Length: 123
Image 1 (cartoon, rainbow, N blue to C red):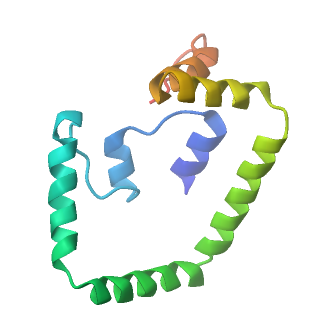
Image 2 (image 1 turned 60 degrees about the vertical axis):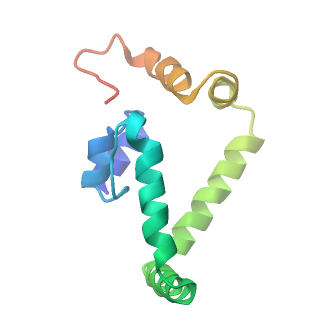
Image 3 (image 1 turned 180 degrees about the horizontal axis):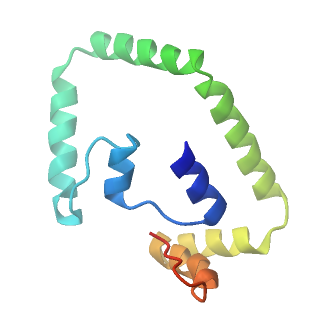
């Protein structure tokens, strides 16, 4: 929670390895290995009976709901909707750059405002 809050309040990014350490992702692969890793994961998932997958998914989702994740997710989606409805030039520029260029360009542009801070790094 501390790391997530730090990143949200400072705008610093998480490296792929950090997301794995935090449990946000289960696997980190090099870009040139992504298609192969995705196919491998899909093949593993396809071998489980669909009914078993549905039961496991319902069980896990219920556990998250009991921990309040659904409420937190609903609140987050409300905030995203509010941000989209309010005129915020930075948000509009970030969205435009992401759509027209790429996410990396938008992140680099957003991080450029912190470049003069000593010791600050986006990662």
